[in-house]
Length: 364
Ligand code: MRU
Image (tube, rainbow, N blue to C red; front, side, top):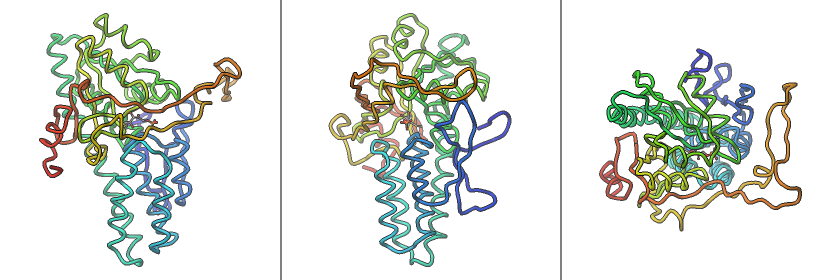
């Protein structure tokens, strides 16, 4: 997508040294656009762990390129397995991480050591390109839902609520939940996005608002607690969110707070859709609440906020009573029964095993 007229992806090969990777450092957005170069697997793992890159599909693509950097340094079996373990330990909830590493390992184990570097880059490039194509397809399928909402409203502006950042910054390009929004906007549908701020790390206020603004999509940032009120007053037509892991049974893990929005949508009879590429489906799990590991992050993300001072330097301030402990579960699980359905690269389906298997019969 474009930043001030220049097309960007979130991860790309450095044109001068194409074995290395460039990423947009998302911990610096929206205040400054800083490109970071990844030159070894430790840097790739650091980027995922510290959330310089984040969002399920982008975490997967970064891990795939991390495996390239690892085999470039040492293509032995032992080094390859060590790199996979290092990357796998960075973040627990988004299944795209394990999916991408497993795919890379399968490709690399089948190649002799001297052929592994070429095989790794070929596979990682393929993972990145597939992600772009899948997100674009999600955009097409999801835009039809927004067009239908516009038709129901007789062409009046459609209000879409989203949570966290599931835009192009969270994928290689286009996004998942935001892809239908970009596609519908590009088609000329009059829409407006309610952007949940998404405490504690504020991915909505910092990242979703930034990328929607750069693309010219009308939007308003709201406090996380405002969504239910807006729904009660007819100011939300549908909600679209992303996912970090969807079980075979159709339960969806996404950024903390998603579950509460789904409950509010159900109480108000509003559609609540989850957009995801198939790399986010964990076919081995069924009960999301029982089986999906939830990342517990630092309490300081809750107790402190960072932003620019009037002088333009970044400052961190405390927002909670000194000494009060804070808990920070980073994701929650929305049960399938609260979802209207899934928007995938193969089309839309009901949230549940039958719906998913209808689109992905090869997993039956
Ligand atoms: O902790 P984050 O910022 O990596 O969490 C991201 C989300 O929860 C997104 O909604 C999800 O990964 C879908 S991304 C297209």
